[in-house]
Amino acid sequence: MPYANQPQVHLTELSDENVKFVIEDTDLSMANAVRRIFIAEVPTLAIDWVQLEANSSVLHDEFIAHRVGLIPLTSDEIVDRMQYSRDCTCAEFCADCAIELTLDVKCTDDQTRHVTTRDLISSNPRVVPVTSRRAEDEAAGYGEADDILIVKLRKGQELKLRAFAKKGFAKEHAKWNPTAGVAFEYDPDNALRHTAYPKPEEWPKSEYTELDDETAQAQFNPDGKPNKYYINVESTGALRPENIVMTGLSILKKKLSDLQTQHSHEIQSDVLTIS
Image (cartoon, rainbow, N blue to C red; front, side):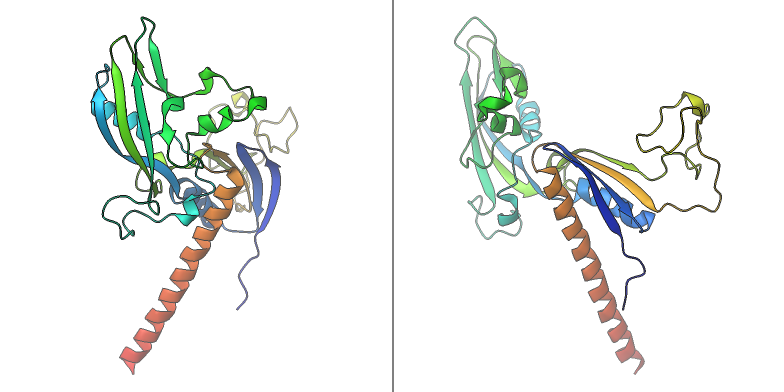
């Protein structure tokens, strides 16, 4: 059975941080489903278990654990091969479901000691804070300002912890979100009037506008329907932007396949019941 439409995808820009592409000839609900999956269902690695062995800083244990958990970790080369901890047969943690990270810092000088992501030591060199990955590239102009600050220590204070990063997705917690933002636009000139501008001439125009400088917005089209969707996916650094897109599409494809299979089973069950 042929599909009702054949969506077309055009890649317009790709960098280390974001990817821009255009989807045409599909429904708004399908394009929005892709956007939501990029944000909430693409798995990454994030710290989910923290044991603090020493903490004499001004921040309490829960505060430290929360800050450490939100640090984005590089996940490109390993997340697909790891299991969710709930599916793993190990008693607590193992190499198949968790990555261990440690931090041990003590301030011994009069100068304030900044504890940052540079101080997090990973048991797996492929899973490190995204800022630490740049530290290995001398040409990137990496500096201390690029590290994520965890806490500040004064003389005599210390912080020592042990943590495990697990596989998860943002539907469970935002720390697993691989995107810093997903821009989604389908009516750059506001011809459908889904947005009501109090003064259209005062609003900045979209980068995809087809209007001249003198025209604030397009003529209202009451019969128009969205057909072209401009999407910009910006990565946190945990996954490359193109991997976010490809993984998201694979997840959507599996969801639709499962729905089709379940629907077929329901139809067969109804037929048997009627018979």
